[in-house]
View (cartoon, one colour):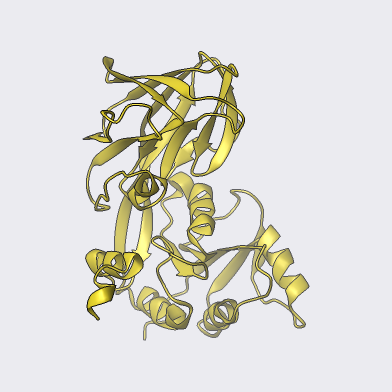
Length: 294
């Protein structure tokens, strides 16, 4: 086995009730192979609280202050999305270890950690590039990270009536939605919020986006697929005079009348996949297609 000197950033879910065996496996493997390991500070502090022993690492980092060869996400897809948002335009490949439930993004099982890391050290892994989208709000700043790997959704407030969303694509008027919201999804996010609202499943390599309404008032309003180089402009009217912009699940409140612009980001997120991983096989397993035939 090639003993490359590699550097890793470790992200995890600090809300787990106990430390998983997968964490120990990951840390022990990297230590034994002479790697450098840097841990996100909140997760490091969580591991320290949960452990009776010292937590080995090369250092601890805050926010976006890390420069490594690979990032590892230990958790579910939510943890992976947070890790991907921190990686951003750095171009660092992300390996997702699934310690959650469904796990489309974090698809490496805890018992497969060593195998997946073997492939990284041997240079035998697969790499997928996934589209990212960006949101801008004219006249109002987006306080957090404006980039989303899964989706950007404009939604009504919890205690509000339906909202009206006027949608244009590349400057051409498309339709005005009367709905609880509208999801702009990447292929990666097609199996997330988009899927639960009746949107299509899209293979990750497709260069398209999907506009999926949330509980539309009219049955004639259906999801629509557009090229991912299109610019989507949205204007919202609401009885509460404000609405929510959810960026990979993280919500910000915006004022009625704010023009929201969504476009493809100038970078992609690189996701590490095992050589044995195949998209349609993963889809069948996660969605339990054919389970009644076994």
